[in-house]
Image 1: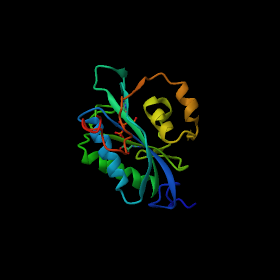
Image 2: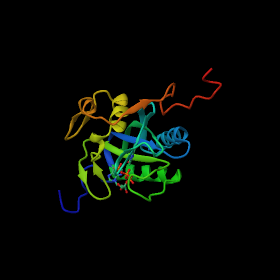
Image 3: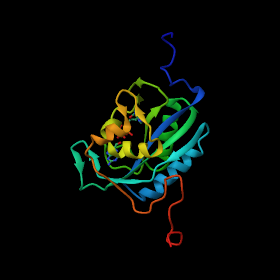
Length: 194
Ligand SMILES: Nc1ncnc2c1ncn2[C@@H]1O[C@H](COP(=O)(O)OP(=O)(O)OP(=O)(O)O)[C@@H](O)[C@H]1O
Ligand SMILES: Nc1nc2c(c(=O)[nH]1)N=C(CO)CN2
């Protein structure tokens, strides 16, 4: 590889589709509606096919000071996609969707209307300020790993091991949302819930 070659997986177009995992989260506004809209927009992105989406899970806000129950709680989920986009182009698409949902970047790990993190992109390993893959904090977060396991029961986090094993070692609590459909399905309306 010459010095001008892009890092693996970051050139603008992948030769073959790869599987990627996107973690979704929100703790401001109508969290459920925002996550469902984001999955719809992801599915409408050229070069992206949604293969599966988790149901939403409720989680306590993780801040730089630890879990903080005084902050609005998060809804989190995960989406498994097949994509011909490079990791960087997929990240750009995720950032555009975040911006369209009024995402304001004020404080690290601060409250947000929508957060879309790229967890893995094929076997891409990259570590730059713009993009680190696999996501460097995924292994510590039940709110990422449990939904990921829902969409890919055999998932392995490169450099860390099977997601099912990692999840067993974590303490951050997550809770199901009673009756909530998968995030690639419409929300239940009072009529459809009857
Ligand atoms: N794998 C990745 N997924 C998403 N953003 C990433 C990734 N690697 C690096 N970044 C960079 O991180 C920057 C900050 O992203 P963001 O504000 O979403 O972080 P955060 O969600 O607050 O924290 P965390 O990364 O711990 O989830 C973005 O500008 C983005 O370029
Ligand atoms: N519970 C929860 N806490 C968080 C989350 C998140 O998605 N869920 N995302 C963060 C930054 O990515 C910071 N803290």
